[in-house]
Length: 128
Image (cartoon, rainbow, N blue to C red; front, side, top):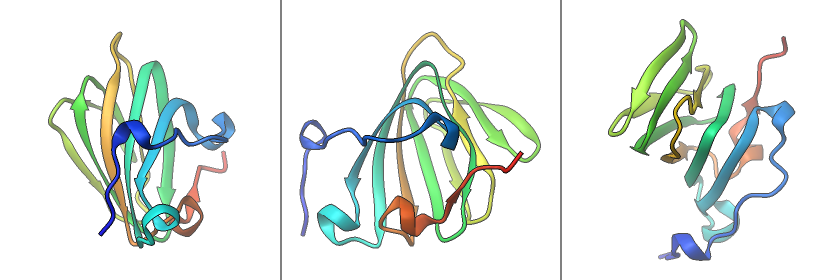
């Protein structure tokens, strides 16, 4: 068993804007490094204007739940509104992302199923 508390988990350092991580506060609550897990459970706060650009994972599925706030989800068909209580599932190789278009923080809890780290997830941004 592994147990932690949100306040004891450091924010992930080194997430780059040019790789789609725009002004995000990200914590890996459970992952391979801390818990030996082949999954990741994460917590993200997006301040107004922050976003996770369109991306995909070649090696894992992802879900996220909007706990607080609203914005838009990036999809293959464009952007669609998303708000508190939404549960989004993106199977591997499915482009997705989130943009905080509001004036308040957005809080997401999310997970990668089948990958215990960003390296293992096959994270990729569009080449354009």
